[in-house]
Length: 110
Ligand code: SF4
Ligand code: SF4
Image (cartoon, rainbow, N blue to C red; front, top):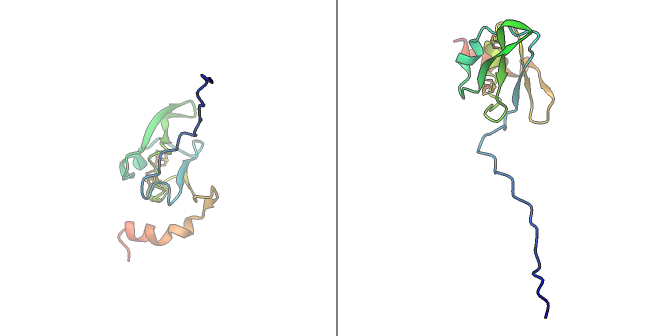
């Protein structure tokens, strides 16, 4: 009689992405340009930006939590120092002209 049990290894399924998560890409901070002013921290609707200590800047620099960033463009629009780039879902850089209309709306223009 065969006492060996056959063990089947199955891959652990990855967590399903929440609806909308990463659909629109990700924000990327450029620490060299970041002044640590904190404006993006206040404007991010998901609260995924914090200011962390950095040798580059006395004030610190912005750090973006990729897992919570929805790629909404708002921080890139609001950053006065153009220190945030937006990435498309395929990893390519999103040209700011692609969210120019959104920027106009956020600033109260129609
Ligand atoms: S793109 Fe939107 S969600 Fe992502 S860090 Fe910027 S403001 Fe927050
Ligand atoms: S708004 Fe721009 S300069 Fe200010 S902390 Fe955010 S990324 Fe840095």
